[in-house]
Image 1 (spheres, rainbow, N blue to C red):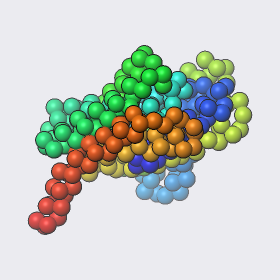
Image 2: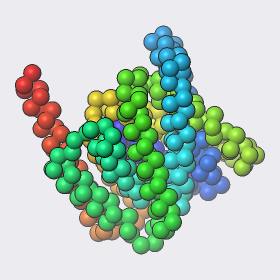
Image 3: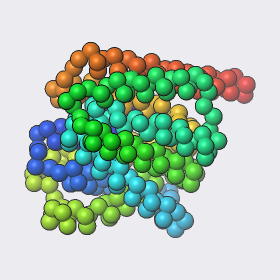
Image 4: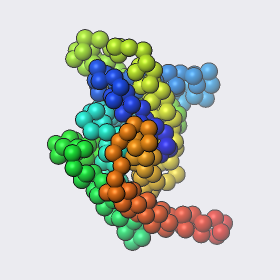
Length: 288
C-alpha cells in the first residue's frame, strides 16, 4: 500500500518537473481517469458487477461524499507537490496520522497503547524535522497540505465507519468515477479543455492513477476493514521514506543531514507504534 502511494507522488513530481505546462487540476483529473480504466478491466467478473450495483443502490451518497472529500484533498496535495516537491509533500501528508488517531479514539473507540502513542510522537517529530527545511516549502503551502491531511483523515473515518463491509475493489472504482464526474466540469471551465498538452505526461498521470488512485486504494479499503484506522496510517508512514529517497536518487532533490535525521525519527517511531499492534496479533493467534 505505502509503495503504491509513494509511486503516485513520484510520478506527479516527475510530470511537474519536466512538463510545467501541466496544471495540478489536470494532473489529478487524469490520475483518476487511470483509476477508472483499471477498474473497467474487472467488469467481466459477475461478482464485481454485482458489488458495484449493490454499492450504487445502497451507498451512492456516501461514495459521492467520499469522492468530494477526495477531490479537494487530492487537488491540494497535487498543488503542494507542484509548489514544493514530492518528498516534502508526502511527509506533510502524514499529518493525517494524528487526525485519524483522534477520530478513531473519540468516535470509533479504537484504543491506543502508550507505546503506540510514543511511536507516533517520535514519527511526527521526524516529519516536523524534515518539513522545516528552509527554502523547500512556504508556510502557506504547508498549511494547505496540513488541511488536506485532515480531509484525508476524515475520508478514512467515514470509510471505516460506513464502508467497512463493502467490497474494496468496487468502492475504489466508484469513488474514482465520482471524482472524475465532479472534476470534469471544473477542469473544462478553468482550462477550456479536458486533455493535457502532450501524450507523455498524460501517460505518466494515467499510470499514477492505476497504481496510486486504484490499486493502492484497494489495499487501503481492505486494510481499514481489518485494521484500526490509526494503525493503517501508522503503517503508511513508510510512504514518505520511499518518496523521499526516490526524489533524491531519481529527481535530483537535495540530500542533507536534516533529511536523514528526520527519516530516522520517522522509521523509529513507526517501529515503536506498530510493535504493540503486532504483539497483540501474535498473542491472539497463539490463544486460538
